Amino acid sequence: MKTTNKLKTTTKFIVILLSTIILSSCAKIFYTPDAYSLAREHKAMAILPPSVSIAAHKKLDAEAIIEQQKTESKNFQEEMYSWMLKRKMQGNIMPEIQDVETTNAILKKEGYPETPYTPGELCEILNVDGVMGSNFSLIKPMSEGAAVALGLLVGFYGATNEVTVSLDLRDCSNKKLIWNYSHKYSGGIGSSPSRLVDALMRHASKKMPYMQQVN
Image (cartoon, rainbow, N blue to C red; front, side, top):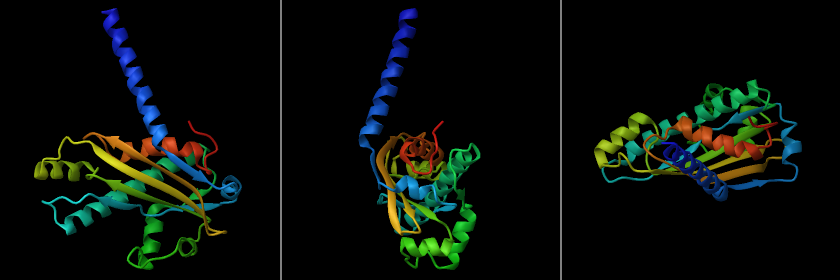
């Protein structure tokens, strides 16, 4: 019995270790030499609505996929805001984080995203010192209802969902990219926007200029 438990513990440790190695090796991080000094000057930042793409499926029309992409974008944005707000409350992030409802309302009035704007223009529209953008490329929806519906429709129910994610932070005063993080994440049917964002932000934040420390 002791041998069995020891084997299970060892196996679990190996799986966790391999997962960490895979995540670390896939991650690509870029930041400018002045990223941290510029980020320290930011008083307020905004999280832009993520750009989300979902792989096309024969039994789903283009309009349905577009609606799912909008849903996932809002889910990811809200999860990122919640994650960063929690760290803000813990004293780990210095700038104020603009409420996503405020961000989205301002952008909607300006016709975004239908009307394209440069990152510098978005900075001025939102009146912040820094903006965080993101891109999520999904094989299937991550929201529970949409994922189950798609599984019943096209037999994709238990398949692993591969997600390619890219985050970037831009300084508004200099209108330039100061930090970028990208990697590929894989998860099963249990994956969700909250779980993905938590895993993503925990790893990405280790090199994010805003972070004072990571718990």
